[in-house]
Amino acid sequence: MTNQPSNLEAQLEALQQEAQKIIALADTLERLEELRVFYLGKKGQMSALLRSMGQMSAEERPRIGAIANTVKEALQSELERQRTTLQTAKIQAQLEAETLDVTMPGVYRPLGRVHPLNSTVDRALDIFVGLGYTVAEGPEMETDYYNFEALNTPPDHPARDMQDTFYLPDGNLLRTHTSSVQIRYMEAEDPPIRIVSPGRCYRRDTVDATHSAVFHLVEILAIDQGLTFTDLKGTIKVFLEEMFGDQLQIRFRASYFPLLSLLPKWMCSGEDAG
Image 1 (cartoon, rainbow, N blue to C red):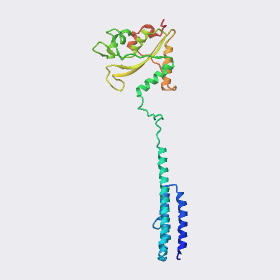
Image 2 (tube, rainbow, N blue to C red):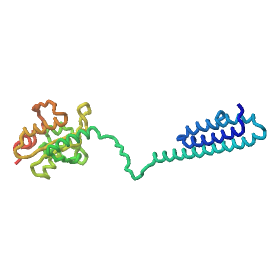
Image 3 (cartoon, one colour):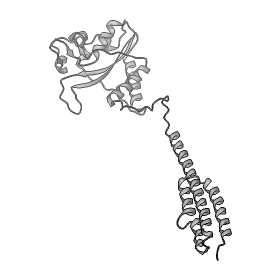
Image 4 (cartoon, rainbow, N blue to C red):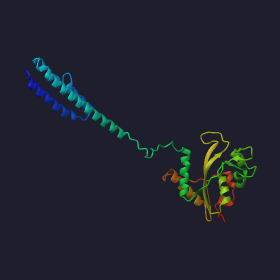
């Protein structure tokens, strides 16, 4: 069937109006490319209409050709306009998604973790503080007086040899226990006293599964009228249950520690401090 010039002209105008409306509704660049191929591709709608131009007279071809070029240019212009609109919208959406508000606080990222030794000591201190104890600390480099003499340890007592102390050239030493903190605290404070003294200690021990040249102690000292060993046992029981769980089975057994035999009688027996 041969298309008459007037009929083909009407079809081109209808194609232009239809295509412009549909192109204006394209919401993605991919959809816009599909419409370009559908209308202006080699096998598109424009090409299908213009195939019949070969059957027209030589006088009609230039006029219909001019109309076809006008339609093609209009569609290309509409495609380019819609492409610009979609690209601008895409860039704007990306900018909004990537906007950085410099007034907002930074994202906190934790720097490492607490060392297991420190976290264990902190947990022990929390328990004793909850029982009414005050944390007391002292120097790691000590004098002989605070580390031994004030604890009634004579120069020739085996406790000194057992400690295998690190002595320093100036006559001082690295503390072998935190009991020196207790002496310093008792010099400065009057009873009643309840302190817990944590810290590093040093001894010339051979390193193995249960010994180290540098280790940690947590000692407690309570001085008040009416305190007995029952108070000590109760304190230790509460601490162990808080530290390891209330299902923990606890048994107290007597033992011997040479240094304790040198302490003042009221510190060892639990008699009144007055």
